[in-house]
Image 1 (tube, rainbow, N blue to C red):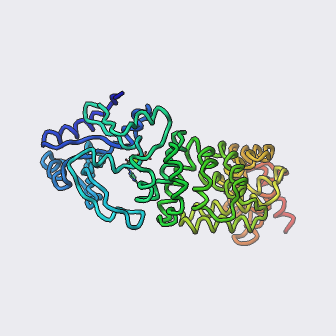
Image 2: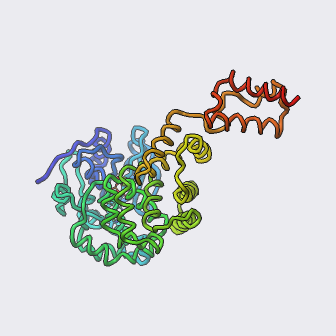
Image 3: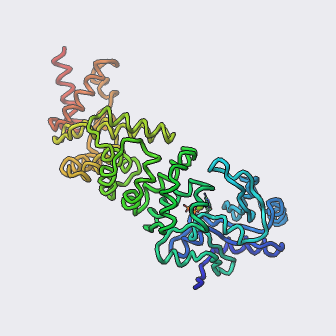
Length: 410
Ligand code: ATP
Ligand code: MG
């Protein structure tokens, strides 16, 4: 079975230009896979028999700008109709002495050699300008079976580059696929090799895995693999419970918080916060992730407030994004009432911080409050009364209250 896919016009033109210059040029990898799945590809990666300098010369002759982005690895970026397209020379990866980068890259003029170095059969398909798919490893069959299978011997492929283990889980999660038996067994057997991989690369694959539509299932199934990149104290039972609860959580941070919370079984705020910080240090995540994750975990160790004033105060402290994450986490563990309330406080744009008050410091100054602590205190008092539902958040009500206090003070 060989399908044909629709190649966009600008990509076809680019391929034609290289073919006219005497080189082969194909679309390859994710764009072919996604097209066969009926998903619009994010970008079209091309590969060619031309060496990088020949690719550059070919486009220079056509008056196109090129950027030698990854020239050592054979990649040239062509600005085609103002859009960047990566064109990479067919290559063979050398040995991987550090389980990360190939030590050397050798260029080749044979497409099948380039395809055979790729990670999975579903990522190792190419197509020419006419859209006919070149599928040397039964990638289409694996696509229709929903199967992630290594090109060649899975053990050898994971030994060459252990990151592929996590990539397999990421694609399984994103496409709702399962790992082929041998690929799955090799992933478990070689999981410890993940320790040799740069934390940033692990984090990149992990965020993709967490965001996938089948994240819950993939995470639950491959605890033995993921354990290697997570803190030690997580248990299989807790992890499975967490994985089962994360389907309705929309952000990576909320999903992670759920896994660490349930997986560790910890209930105390500072211990949970510390776990989050440790995880982020291990994987060298961005500072924002570290702050959000540890804050959420800390909060999950606290009693769930039920009253509207308490929930408004919390929303004021956490801000919009974290409040919505917390609301989803609460809902997922059965604290629906508090979760829905917190969510509606944010969605309705209720007043939870001084910035949202219907008066400004300037307006209070006009009433006679002098700049400084007394003004700040009045604003805080107004906010508290609004959050308690004792004062309406309108200019008239707030100014009237402040004026009355000012008078009393005189
Ligand atoms: P995405 O839509 O997530 O970008 P993709 O298939 O384009 O999916 P990339 O990580 O961008 O994935 O990699 C592009 C292609 O390069 C893959 O389809 C695969 O053929 C090949 N590839 C990437 N990383 C590896 C690797 N570690 N080992 C072998 N081949 C790889
Ligand atoms: Mg890609």
